[in-house]
Image (cartoon, rainbow, N blue to C red; front, side, top):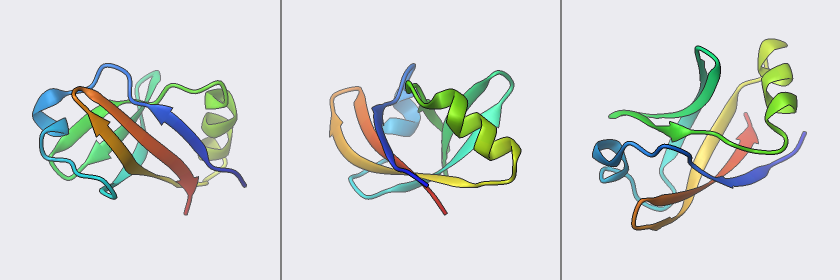
Length: 83
């Protein structure tokens, strides 16, 4: 098990504006992408060098959460960890 820190790609500003530090989001596969799903919608795509590993674990049934650690304008930093 591991944690990964990354910045969300293609952030949805409508959703990002509803987030705050320590907000928890569900990490889900949406077509070919892995995204952070907030209560108000998809916040953005997960990009990481370990993404293939995360996808492999998700396909095996592992669930992940993304916790917002920093918001700077449109840049949202999240910590991804298994639950």
